[in-house]
Length: 245
Image 1 (cartoon, rainbow, N blue to C red):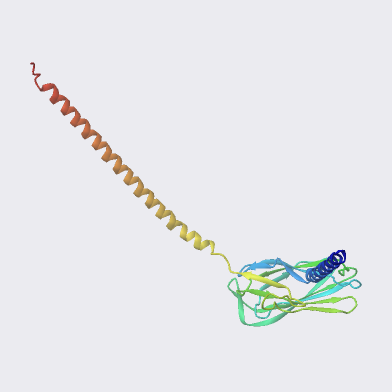
Image 2: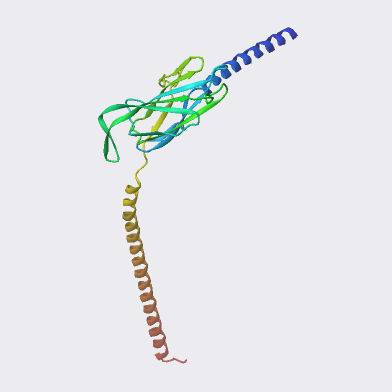
């Protein structure tokens, strides 16, 4: 009996260890992927996003980051924020048909952004760095996939280029993805609907006031009529002779 309990306990411990290893083993690398933050923005608007780059290597530092903007979703305006110790190079490409930004047709769009570390600014093991970007107007698509290359000081290049897989399974080297949601109804549309609603409310108030006034007048007339009839009845009673037995 004791031997059976020891065997069962050992088996349970092995199973727990296997599950914990699997969970922690998958959670570790997933948290070290290159990502874009925030992960969601609005179609047609402008967004400030940051490419967050952690260093996974235990011995080498991140020295260069290349972010490729999707060809099927060009953006008219892209600007970068200075990152201390890093330089940025901007590559553009022709777009046909042109994209429109505030009524002006744009024939070129940013194709790739490349950040390179200078001096001692490389991202050390166990650290991360963010590279902020402002872009817009954002295209009318469900998402933007930014294929990214991460170069280490030892020459290793990690290619974060795998698009999201169908079925929800995460690929081995997922690319950063920015989900885009449809814009809410415009303020102008809401504003144009407001006067109509106000007018309807005013009409309802007017009708309600008219009804109340009419009922009040009717009640007053009925009260006066009752008073007159009561007075007539009282006068008639006083004029009738008193019959004595």
